[in-house]
Length: 395
Image 1 (spheres, rainbow, N blue to C red):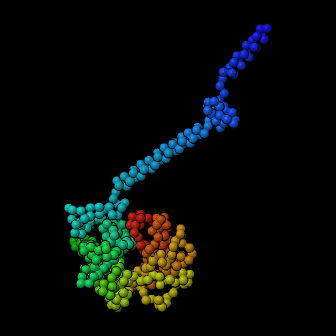
Image 2: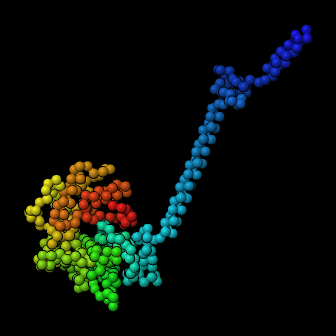
């Protein structure tokens, strides 16, 4: 009896507990009285998991992801700021133009283009780059030289009843004080006078502007924007200060003599006028590279058939990369490489330096790749707009 009574008591307590314990699930086809839908489920601890809970879970993940994204962006920004500070502390040499930060400001003696640093080229290594549209620089000529470029470009304009040559990309950019003499001839004279001092230790005039390589010539490419027949004589006349000191490269008696400055006429420069003097010339021509293609796989020809342009009358052989080589998508195809190789071969056979303008400028990776290819294929100088990129890139 006692055993049976105990069993009954246990059953009654169990039944009582089951009757008092609430169910946390809903009927399959309808919501229960507590409002839980059929889709509601029990979690591992007896908590309900339904659509609302799922939405809360996605919101939680989104919030966490956003926070971590902001943390990563903040870290990148902090690193960028620290690197910028480090570069600025490292020195102004990172940017070729920063050395001229005070140019033109009151009290610096640069208001009238009269101040030229004497030591800013002391450790500059010349590199084979040409400062395209150099007059757009913060300080024309000096920015390019400080980057190491051995070539600069000046677009010159001549107007009726005015012997001055104005420098600028178009007429809207011309100003009275930006002239061929003030931006190029006079500064070159000043630099060369300072690198060739007359002292008890030195009494010569043969040093160029680069201390690292005093024999390196500076190529002054003069792009005539107005009538060539009228403008070219004015260019030659305004070169007289450099000519009188013996600082211009010249051709005489069948021989080319390279000096501190080599002047090359391009744009509307007339070839027949540039070579008119058959015995002496101190300015050279920019020959058409596109007309010089020769089969790159054929033996080098010694024929004079195409020798209209040669080292006695020309210095550069130039052409537009975009027009003669064409569009580049990631790299050069075989036809484009043959075009480049044939043109460079023809220029070198004539003793000229091959130069391409309108090379790809963007994206930077493609630009640098083209620079490397052109140098590997034998181009003699690179046309550059980004002085910093040219001076920091190994090509």
